[in-house]
Length: 501
Image 1 (cartoon, one colour):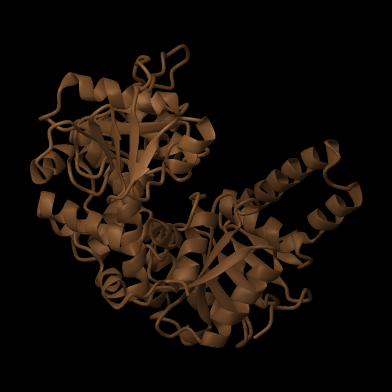
Image 2: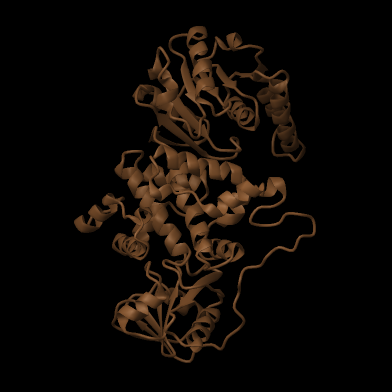
């Protein structure tokens, strides 16, 4: 089915930040929009907010006055649900309560024509459950925008068990026509983004709880080595811990207490204390005026290495060449030896475990980087058996490559390696359970939460066999179902297939 024509009237229920943003998107695409809110004056306030935002674009020369006038002129205020009768598509962005959404849609079924498409912007409720009480549940679909709707590209198009595939396809095509990047997903807890993203927060809190590094250090490593736009702790502070913790609990409960989605006691403490992040002035960080902000741990300068030996294929080789660091090369299994210290990429094992299993003493492991040529920092950890000189040698080596070095405690998987492995594992399970395709999962994570790379594409770049080994190592260390490898990932490794041809 093609996109809804511009002649289709779009109704938006709920004129808060999200609802007003959706109204702006629809009006910008050329639709007449009816904006309604049950609270007196809220619809007018929502439209005025859109007007203020766009007037700044006019003042800066980014928008023509005529385009502004036309867009604002297409947003009309409705004073009742009955006034939405002409709409061909109704999008609700109201309170996240199942009974309220069911009541509103039930009324709309009687008020609007039989061909109206009803869309819910819910981020956590089941589209199937919302449609359960409707006469025509086949006309209900999820249309999940991300905040702020005018700026964020992703729209998750969610099909409940009764949703007509043609309806979902029409909304998919309409979102694309509105300039968005839509993905299709099945109505399961968290849909794509809120499900697959859980490890981004959970593993950071777990690494912190294990005493590996401070929030500031973990954030810096995730940004400067992993390539993420924001670190997990600063992002949780921005989202609000009450919101983030509630979403985690919702997904955890909806999956019948699956350990993979286990909430963090660290975050619960913040919520209990009322330290909800930026909006309360305190979270993992202190936002009070004049508060001193914690800095990431960065090692002091150490001597440059004297002898670097590369064995086999090592991802750091390109950076060695770019920085003009001399090295010798021979066969092997992808390791570096620097002045007698064995440097290994994290594979999910603790450095101490690697030293024990390999019968080595001077062992240091280093974290995964999105791109070594653009990375600014690396996290490293030494085996308990290693001498103090091993860390000095490893630190000097990475500093000679132009990287800031964060020395962390020896934890399984370090920081980026562990997080990316868990993100990819959850993405693989979403594909396995037919929530979405691999391409849609990756698109959702790059466009919905600005990940530097889709988890499954990243997994293939790392190597699926290596990723599986990392997950198996994490599982072996903790003996928790949280780290169980996806059956689909295991199957692809054993079958020699990929997520992408």
